[in-house]
Amino acid sequence: MSAAEDLARLHGRAFAGQGRGWRADEFADLLASPLTCLCAGPHGFALSRVIADEAELLTLATDPNHRRQGVAAALLAAVEGDVAARGAARHFLEVAADNTAARALYARAGYVPTGQRAGYYARIDGARVDALLMEKALHG
Image (cartoon, rainbow, N blue to C red; front, side, top):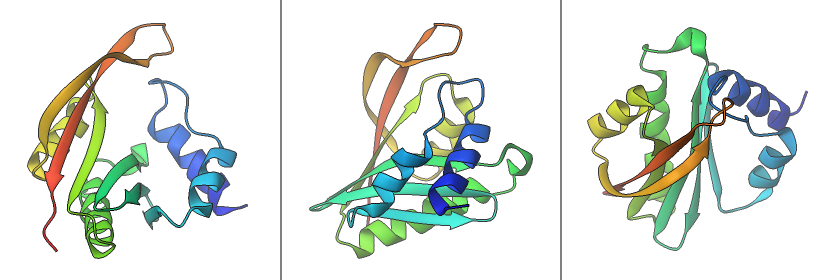
């Protein structure tokens, strides 16, 4: 089993019922890029991309059996440290408006809303959900 396959399997579990999980080939492409930063643990992972002095959180996935145990917060802090070490001064992300747990996590971590993409996410039932754009200034 490859790292990309492991990530795809966990991503599928983490986002079950919310839409399509990312495929192994998509993760393989991201992992092959020197711009990508992966912080992974046994129960989740965070994946960001750094370009110049900005970073974007591509995805943060936690095994559903290990939620509410600080896994996501630790992974988010780790990836923030890594992207800051690579020169990023700001970290951006988008989160589904209906993902209240993730929105609370990001707010606690210091992310502030900066915009919205109407109907950005498609759910399995065909519903469309807005994406909330958030940003955090990183310090060193």
